[in-house]
Length: 627
Image (cartoon, rainbow, N blue to C red; front, side, top):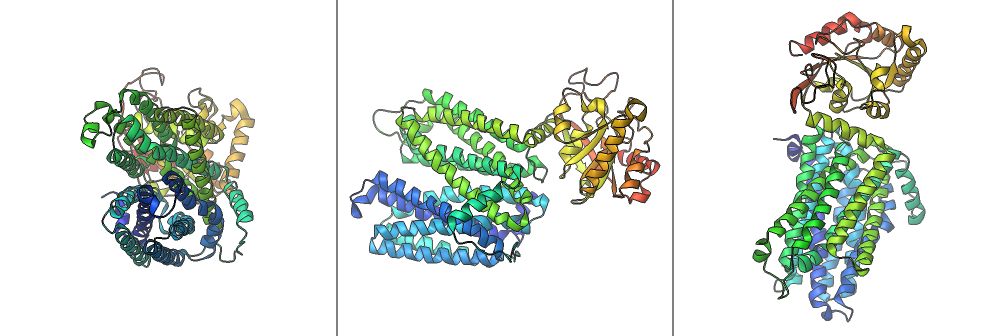
């Protein structure tokens, strides 16, 4: 069984997963039940048009995220998180009891107040929901845990939306809805009692109850780490993108597919299942660590399939004789193309969003992680409001729904390019990920021997021009490689090495100043707690054999004593990037695609034992006969 599904058998994850799943499920049962009730029975409660009431409901649910997220972030940082989650679930029970009273009294005002309070409860739960994961999960479990949370959330939204509409449509529907939402809230509270303790990150924090001032302060927290802030903008953009699509499904189903409400459900289900699949694929594709290289991959797919959805849609003609039954809608070949596009958009959306959430959690300062996530929630809500405004404005200006999808796909490409220009690390990791998953099939052994924290040096045999990229793809930590200045400046590789902050070096007889500067940079990096990568042979092998290790490693650990981890690359000799049978990179597809390679790590050596001879012997033994 996949490691991420093994988490569902762990007490440190399962109760939390059930709690958040039931919460999202209950939110959507009540919200959609209320929307359906007001859409079809608005005259029982008010003279206002149903369309205005539905949009009012959407606004009342999102408003608390602006008002209370900042305060919720402070509370989540100040108090122990499992206790706080139990409190929020008790609050949900109270809110659902109030909703029962609203249904019983047929009070529209009380129904809307209950919806607002439900949004307030969700805004309180939001920061603690994501901040608790890094405390309960290991780094190599964080992607899998987020994948389960994201896929579970969308499944809960889907079935909650369906269930809410079905239950409220039954005879005495408001009574059955009341029973359902209270029961779900109680079960959610019982699940929350199994969540293990998660200590407060900042117990000394003094809460600022001014929501405006604290909102601004929370947004400042998000800007404290540039990569985290741009990741938050990326998450917010995902919710903008998703809000545009989700809000247009009814019109698309009716006006383009020619279907009825069952077609709307079909679109929602297709999109949600796609996101669930994409989220769950993240762990396998990322090698169980936070692989932000999947984010550009996801954004490319989100744009391409949005464009194809626009392209395919004109071929789907709506019927003029009233809504078509779902069977006739599915009988059209173009419908299946549209469904394929929606599944693909969802899959690539999952690949896009899960690494971003994991990166925000892993790189945020623990003492104010919840407040950073609260700032994320505020921006998410703002982007969704802007998405609603853009959609309404463009449709009012005469654009069709497929044309709105086209605009959103093009905007997605522009936003992605802008973010990747500002933070080349995303694009760098994408290029590394693409190399290792297109040209090679990489398997690692004992890669955990690279320490999770603190300074270290790794040494490896040098077989090809992409050795550093393969190691970067396998390592959970960034590695600064020391490499020959001529390789550093290779046109195809220069961007990758520059953005990974590689350190160019030259032989003393060629450029003594460059060599000395390289050793200074290595010492500074190790003192800052970074990982340095070396190829002690000094050059790429010309015959596949390991050459004598040079004394530079001894000089490094003598000045800065740190553990040294031996690595061995296996299977790269004879590939396009190696020098077998002549210069490298001159014979495309020399061995085809998807060549199997391995990276094997040995136990760390103490600095005093890390002599060139001993390291060469260790690397040679790790490599074995497979070159």
